[in-house]
Amino acid sequence: MQELCRRNPETGEATFDRAALPPAGAVVVSGGSALTEARGQLGHTHTSITALDDDHTMGAWGTEIFANDDAMDWIAAFEETDDLHLVERVLRAITNTSEHLEAPACSEALAAAEVVATLLKRPGPDVPSEVFEWIARVRPAVPPELPGTAQQAIDRILAASELRELWDEADPADATAWRAAVADLRDRLQ
Image (cartoon, rainbow, N blue to C red):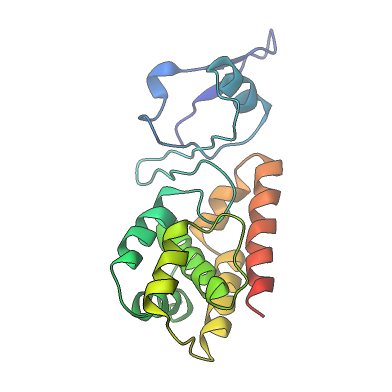
């Protein structure tokens, strides 16, 4: 992990390395009071968390299901479909593998699960208008096994995934809020 924020052991002051900051729009998943203070120094007043490493940047601006780039990019692709094949494919990609789950695939699966909950007339608070517009346009029937598949995907993501690991490294309050959002989604699929 590239370190963006440090606490000076002598003064206790939080500092950040401007040269190490991610590009505009990226979000850093990290925890600790040093990051909180550094965000304040930068003028950030909202939750803006980002984890950077050599392989992956998680673009997230909040703890809700759709508060990340991967989920919103998936919604853009989903809008172009005329059936539930993309929802089913993304959920089965999580449930039908024994390999480690990458964060982008998990964010997409959570977005797909939220589409299923919305089809069951139990939408979450941050469901984009595009989902409601798609449902009104396509009017799909929900296969009876789809809510269970979505719950299984959520269980896998919470049990062992890169996305869960990133949130585990985040500020504890943000991690708790993310887990609550995911648990709420799982409950709405019943």
